[in-house]
Length: 519
Image 1 (cartoon, one colour):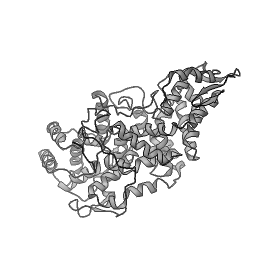
Image 2 (cartoon, rainbow, N blue to C red):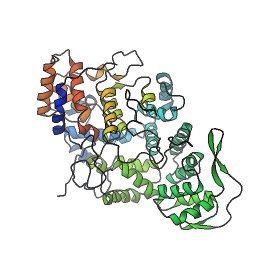
Image 3 (cartoon, rainbow, N blue to C red):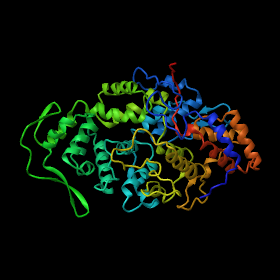
Image 4 (tube, helix red, strand yellow):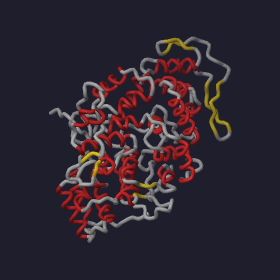
């Protein structure tokens, strides 16, 4: 890997970065009330979760067309580069699209096209190494990195999202949970989605599983959590009744693992709970899965993530709009969210690490080294390689899943920024034949653009906007001061520009493209 020492003058450019960034503070936390981002403006919710029409897409400025496209691609951990989106043969002064097609519509179409997934799984076997024990939480991101945008990819992405929420988190941080539980939950939910199983069926199958009981271990704890997680029902009086129905279910230690034991001493007394009568434990779980509040609760959990920062009443309106469409599968919910005009045009919130890093890796033609996914998902901490654990964004780890609020406290964000900067933006792959050497590749800078156009090209690729006049002036001054203002020094120029961009808070936030503001 090739790293480059960056001029000290760039430290002073933090001030410039602050002036030119469009998002909230990279190390702050906007909270979940009073609007999104750091502006304090109250987000205005569209009258419905309607799709972005071709007319509305075509009416956007050329940069914003790319920005909106990369907003949904980023949410999917993918990205589209500037030279793929625009015809840059005449430079960047007058941007021309590669195709007049609504790119957002193209993305949605691509998510319905299958690919041969086994090809990519075989590639992973040959290309990467994983920790023998922790592979179940390291493998999935490698799969998402390798599989192209497709029906297969969308299914994998949905399961990754779900297993990082309170709904289906394997909770590998617990002593009663094995890493293999993460694999079993992921594959069970994935197979169910690929069989077009309903949300209700998937939830029921998960609730009765040994893996779920390893997370919530007793009849009292498990039944309470199922009502709270899947119904947002917080009624202490119901817990003893539910526990009575599940009194013959228990988690017991056997050697080094915990097993779900269902004894023959079943409950025989009818229990009035969840507006119905149950006797057996499976009947209780079925009552949860069939309850009218299940779908609104699942939708609400996902809306909290993708519309983080919205006022509670605005999120409630979004939930109502999605529920009115009568979603049956998880596909129905995720597509409603991702391709809504509300999400594409108005959402302004902090991005998860995966949204930033893997979307940029796609745009920068970045190459993952052999150990990358092993190190990224390492449970133990190290300052040499910032892991998701360091960032408090560990995959499939937490008992209650990742919170909707991205951890942006000083220490968490320091690791987050370090990974994006050092493992991606200023890391160039020096040896194309070395599988242990990662970084962005020569193709990134192999464009017929020079000086301001080259800087603007890098800004478009990473931020979906051109550099400001002030940014151009200051960056060109730094480049000239270091003697890199020659046509054969584009690698060094790129390093300086990308290092500067790594410090912009807008890189770590989604931005709105159409937003009304209430005084």
